[in-house]
Length: 285
Image 1 (cartoon, rainbow, N blue to C red):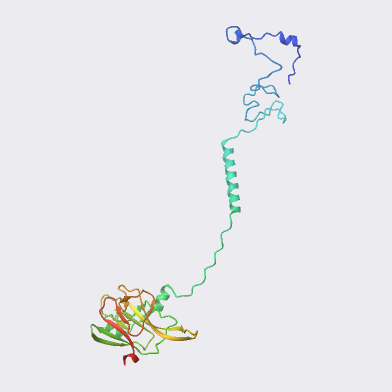
Image 2 (cartoon, helix red, strand yellow):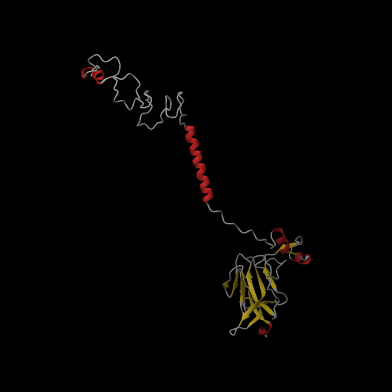
């Protein structure tokens, strides 16, 4: 509010104003800018204090100065702290921290994993020592390996291993001539391979593996058409991941799986031409 001496309308109207000629710069101008008590420049003058506030008028987005009789009562020319780049960086950190906290609290907890179950199976050196068999010095000397004291076996018998109740035999043929007869009923498993130290049925052909296959007798449960069950001991053959495979009736069997063999079946190992015919003592008569 203007606090100067009040004037009458006549005094205000009698004041000299610059003409159009003066405004265009062709005549002498006034000694001081015109004063209009009824109108003020909103861009250059503050309505409250009457001071020149060129940093922002009524339409400006910048904060106003609260000094010179402001409503807050600063009155000593104190100004608000300017908004700096550090303030912006602090706001960004606060916003990022708040977002991370909300995301952390809203995320569901990961599912709990079951604790590992204990494994009591033999492994590592203990398993190797369990599968290692001692070598008979006389047998090792006959095979030309007198310095070998133990051999690691690739095969372990299953829990259902049993000795056979029938006297099975292997009739070995080379061409049309029988060259050998092997009794295979005194134990539950017979290892076939080229390693004569541990093989129960040795093979001399170079295409055969050292531990090639196993003939295993297993106790199985059979169920009749009337629902009756009975146990029987049957012969099986399993290939020990050999290089050239095992054949039953000229068909290669899958490796590491038990394959049931019956009487009159013909077995071949690797590329050997020898044929091993399975027969029982009763059927051979």
